[in-house]
Length: 104
Image 1 (cartoon, one colour):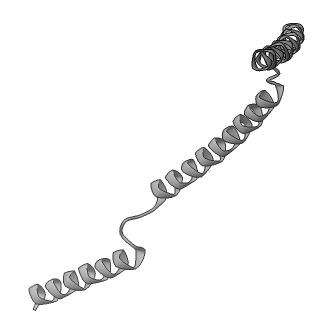
Image 2: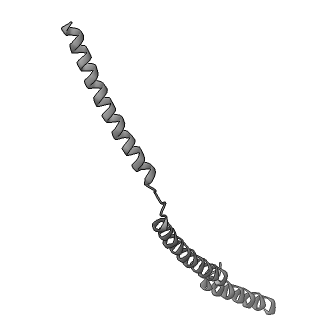
Image 3: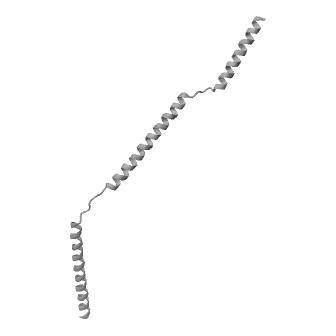
């Protein structure tokens, strides 16, 4: 009979501790239901706004650089000036040589 009494005592203790845990979980559940969580995205919005401003600034500077490069390309020559002068001198010397040969 002592084993049966021992087992019943253990069961009573376990039931008592189980009831305490259930009560504690119920209190936690009530507190969780009362607690409200608000989503605050102001920090994220500020970071996105700063990032968008930086992107816009970079885009405008890139556009200005692109326009300046295109202007330089448009006004650049593919034939250097010294080559034009050299070809002109050769052409004039050939013309004089031809005139000299024809008049002689």
